Amino acid sequence: MGAAANLIDLCFGYQMDQDGLDYLRYIRQVASGARTMRWVDGSMERVTVPLFGYVWEENGQIIGNISLSPFQWRKSWYYLIANVAVHPDHRRRGIARMLTRQAIEHCVVRQVSNLWLQVKDFNQGAINLYHSLGFVERERRTTWRSQAALSSSGDVSSKIHVIPRLKRDWESHRTWLGEMYPEHIRWYFGLHTEDMAPGLIRHVENYLLYEQVMHHYSAYHQHELVGLMTQQPVSNRQNHLYLAIPRGDYEVEATTHLLLFAQRMFGGEKALRVNYPAGKGVPGFEMANFKPTNTLIWMEYPMVQ
Image 1 (cartoon, rainbow, N blue to C red):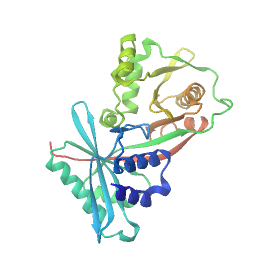
Image 2: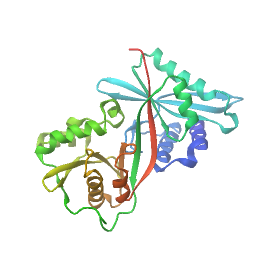
Image 3: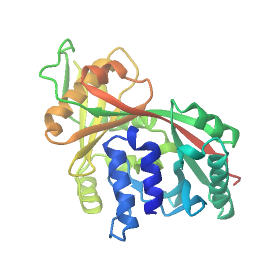
Image 4: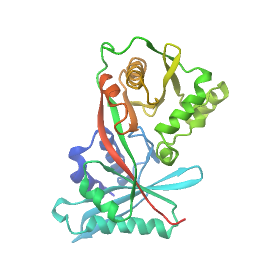
């Protein structure tokens, strides 16, 4: 696994953000025999250390790699193809295609019902490859990361105010979360909306189960609910934010106000991360001084049930 990590570093290290570098470090720790947790908090999403994978070896050198990371969600297993890497000196020989076919076969033989991959939106060669193998695009999502906090809210409307979520806001929260984080992608985030329901019992259960507490906030324009946000700590360096903001006249302002509020409340030494539908709420993120780290195309392979 150490040689595979070196290959991944060679192919992608120059374009990795801090989360990618942390993930690579975990792989190397596994390769060295270090004891690590199965679930890696290197990103705002819960990502498994690869438990399966294949390499392409020639003359004693690993020149190709593909990993398969399993996720369990609602009693089903989802497999994510990742780390598809081919040494620069050996590209355009069909190695990535053959490795991907092998990963598909691995899942078919084991009767895996859900197989996914993610590819950066600018990698047209890889996108074409996966389309040709039968993968279907399902989502495009952008990851945003907070930068230095702004000193003021600028031209953002002062009529929007943020308060702890009211119990009456829960139904809207659940509906809007469903729009921003559709059911078919929640396995990747481990997003159980029922964990966000109001109530002291639910609050205590979350703490006992996950050893963390989520905080929920509502954004109001006068007396109209225009957005909601959940803060979830995922490591000692990052907070994960879930935004649930409907389309409408106050979408940008609600996005900006909630993100600025999060920076004041939870920023400090921690980075704030948001995974959001690509193209949605962009002016609001920019006004709150969040920067996109990547936009990924989520693709699913049509497994026979």
